[in-house]
Length: 308
Image (tube, rainbow, N blue to C red):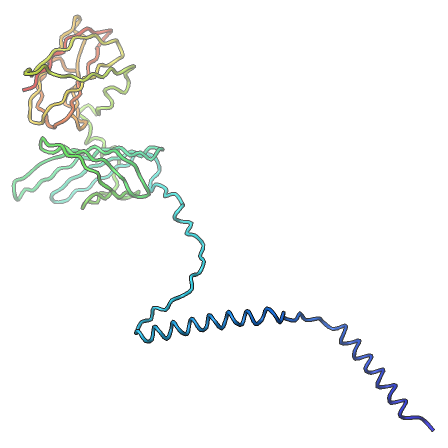
């Protein structure tokens, strides 16, 4: 007689051993640290309590401004980035013409971001029979599209100095309430030149050396004479402060009749070149320049200056 009980027990033990082996070979799962989870649950519970309290207070006050926990955000990198000039170094010219205003402007941007330039404007109001003109010199820097400028303005014998911010682009120049459009510099430069196509800078640009001297009158006097000699290729530059609306009389004499002078206004307008005698009406207030040079060889000269 077969012992059924022993056979069943043997089969059951074998099955249990097989099941245990399969379970032990299966993927192992990490169990949460029982000590960590309560702490995390506590934090969530506290935050939820704070949020619920803020919302309740906001509803009580009728406000939607609920307090929020500060969050860390990356620093704004744009604040530390340099602002590059809107224009590359070079010369730029602009103009505009309306029923009452005509403006010509030119600026030079140096690699160092320094800005220099000139502006000439006219105001013409035919209805009221009014006409005037003015000149400006510009000196400053460029910062992005901003021109931060010291502007000197000469108008009707008066000189004004202001600090202004103009806006610039490759197509426009905006100052105060005026917007100018781009124009060929060949066209704009003619406005600042004399009939011979010269500007003030051209009178000394080729000189070997320029000797500058300030001229003063003796107390109670309105005239003086400067006696000197200029070497061939050099220039003697005299600066004299005068008021707009006055008249300046100039004459020069030299041993060999080989000395001449040029006159430039404070705003950079050439009032005369290669002269030996002239009476000049002074359009502006400021420092006038009298430039003496020789026509041939060295020149020994006497320069007489009188202001009336």
